[in-house]
Image 1 (cartoon, helix red, strand yellow):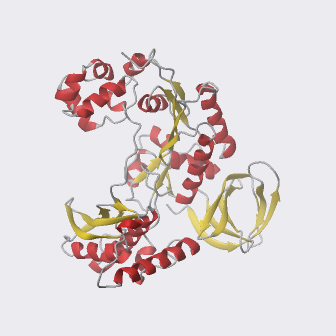
Image 2: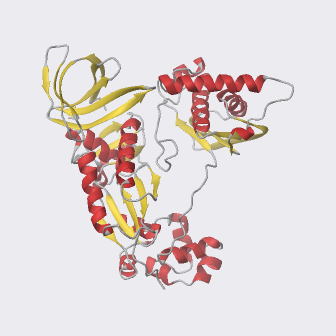
Image 3: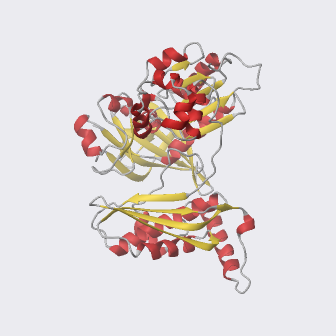
Length: 405
Length: 87
């Protein structure tokens, strides 16, 4: 039994978003293979590739040196967060004109829910209008995929059917036919691990997945409620209309040079701690734990963490905990990262000490520094220790979250 | 990798202020060397906050190279900050 209701969910997705925005912004790059990278070095990883680059085999995450062998003439463009934020805000403004129930899933995709609104135009018309408005209000090179379905999963699936400029609709009538054209890993949420689990019990196509009974999925394949969720989701019923709270706030950095001294690396760690502290406070959160990790050039992974009794939120507290953990990190480091966890929110947790006014002073100092940085620009005031890192560690945009946009 | 120059050059700009969605449109600009560049297309124009100060950025092309022009809305100055030929 599939969900018979008229599809009222619309998924809008700017595919290859950063690359498309760069091609819009720099007309000479249109119709050329380009790769957006976080740093203009040959060993940098590709954040986004244009459709022209993807057609030549370039994939996200690939090293630029490897990609440029596949796609001669590949142009590296350093990511430009303010530009992407601007297009994100434009997209939010456009989508917000059609339904108040808008959820941005990431910087380049949003979901419109038309449930409860009976007096709207056909969703297909709205989809085409959104495409046209994106071209009119951002630029002629901008394209997006629109998918319409009875639940979020099918709307997203529909949006992925005809990239880069498609508009598709999935209903209870064509649902089986659509699944018949796809592989298991084409389904959002089915990657290598779940693919192996499904194939282990003889489910090797989306159709077989759809036809599997609920008990098999729940008790044998996924061994949890996840199996039931998949059973319901595949049939077009909604199970993904949920908000997830922030569990951690973190930042990582791939060292620009593998011959940095320990002192230089701790300065970069300090820079990351300041960045994490600023993000933490921008979410009005406090943390109770710090987690530090290191990846080495010989592919080792080291990590350490510490939880403390009193919640904290200042850069100094985060940095002192992180540096204490980092003392035990191995040599030969190529990547470092720091995360705050055990988050709690609001003013209620900024508890003052009974016998000391240190926390009162910290509250005032951190508040003043943040106010100056908001007014005069990011990192107007920062620790002198992080000066060397400021040259190389730049502001980046997380793909899967809209919390810091 | 070396196809992009990062600059900080004061320039003179001819701009039209019209109507529509993008009312401010650079038409041409003159570099310190005296060279005049006619803007063939504005790729993207967008505001960027530097603290509370707004800098309006215009990524433009003359058909030969891409340029970034920045208008400081507080000081009312124009700067050329990038040039890329992507050959």
